[in-house]
Length: 110
Length: 112
Image (cartoon, each protein chain N blue to C red):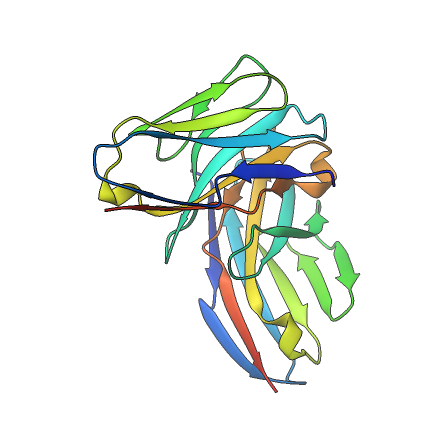
């Protein structure tokens, strides 16, 4: 069974305090690993897609990395506007729907 | 603006009432999805439609029905609402796999 586990469930950081979110997964063939950001009262918004172990992608203060069993979302010098829930999802091969983790709720305090 | 549009944004139902949640996308995507999101449970797939004319059950289909009306529209129906169906419902569509899914802004449903 395809599974995604995110940790921690919640993370509270001071502004400028760098940290990482974890997404571990088991999937029968990986089509892609996706990171989304979700603000309160809104739908998830796409951040990154990673396809193979060793791949890295960056956007502003965020960097996503991928190994064969997990992905990390590194947040460097976060700002209060980075506060959100970050969701990880894996896409099995073929047309099988994405499987989502439960998310990490990030709070950045000024 | 291109994207996924969900209606209504908020709804309160009494137990036993029925309603249909509407979803439309204007990106010419083939696949569409309905998820529900509950605190501590994450996004759970209710039904999906891989292409026009097909629908399949997801993880939590009981109590729901869907209709893929055409390529643009995918509706979710609750025939007899129950308090356990109180949730936030998201519709999504998939086009280029590079971007995964595009989500709507959600429908917050309360069943009393």
